[in-house]
View (spheres, rainbow, N blue to C red):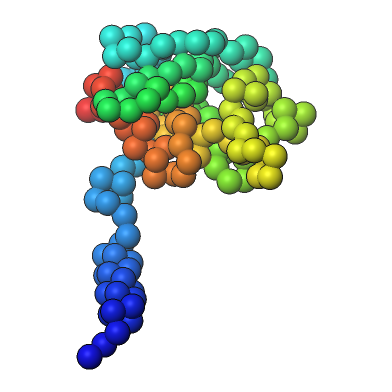
Length: 177
């Protein structure tokens, strides 16, 4: 007879191998497109009616080709309020090129945290999260999406959580075709 601890270990290892072989991600995460064109042109009023609370409008000087940029909160169903940064460009081409360059700078594990090192420093303090003296600062936004002319940076501890929160906002505002 196999000891209980060994049986539990073998079961856990088998389950992990099964999850990894199946892709390891939920279907919805793999179906979500990070950059998606849209026939619509969005602005901040596109988020009216869903409870998006605009807290700050940023000075876009130094953010090439941007029309506007905002920081605000939205509360997805059964969740605490989530912070978002929304940047609008005149079209999808600008959002998916220069918009992506600037979003990459401030999102994820490799985010530039010091405002002195950023090409566009407006809102730099709003993008930081501290995790105590031992671990220092990191970016509040793990990732972003581009939908049409909009670049949406979404709060999250990792890309999957950020994508889920971006998608929750986009679906609530009925922005996807």
